[in-house]
Length: 331
Ligand code: SER
Image (tube, rainbow, N blue to C red):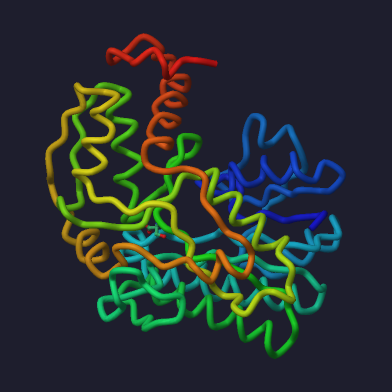
């Protein structure tokens, strides 16, 4: 991995992954791909090349691959689960037609491709506890349908054409840099923002609904490590279960209240998100990722909570608020 195109570089994952790749591969071209209306700004724009990269325009992608001699494509363009339910045709167009464009370019120009899958690739018939690597995948959401199809199409291109496709099934991702947009697990990010700003949090997911979650630094590490993994050890490719923590809204509320006792939360359950959440695993078994490429997360709920609060307070310039435990401010 040297010259990399990150498609969706201004999104929740892309904005941090692009910067991480630029630090890891300073000699390479790490191109921040964007769509109109979501152009990179600030450090993301200034620290390396960027290019418009709409997945629905194959020629546009091919030109970038040629210009920067791209060897690896991170395909992070997607509508998340709740938005995809509102715009299923657009979700299909971006997630499937976009992927096909990328895989065709990868086949012709010999690029490796990472397209994330998700806990959303599972459905109501999937075993919810200790969800195995290889199990029933019959999702009911359009997001999930596109994620299963992504896994299958990516494996197809590997087996038929030898395209080096690899992937992980991300849990809900929690981060302080860029907000997710329209996912079922977004509540687990938004609650931290509300807590730090001293606002009441209105939770759209019912108490008792467990889902897998992960702190962004672990997700970025997974995205890099799977692409760097020794291919001879990989029995799976698209896509690996990876897990770090599993919780439900009350667990998260109590954990944040250990640090910000004034956090107020009430429920206003969103039926669309709740139905999706009910169909997803409570906790995935990630033993194949651990065996085949040494996956291991670093952050648990406590460590993530401390880091999220610290960084959101910095972001909002709120150092003195919320009766902060001063140990959080140790350099
Ligand atoms: N975070 C995603 C969503 O909620 C799941 O992969 O849609």
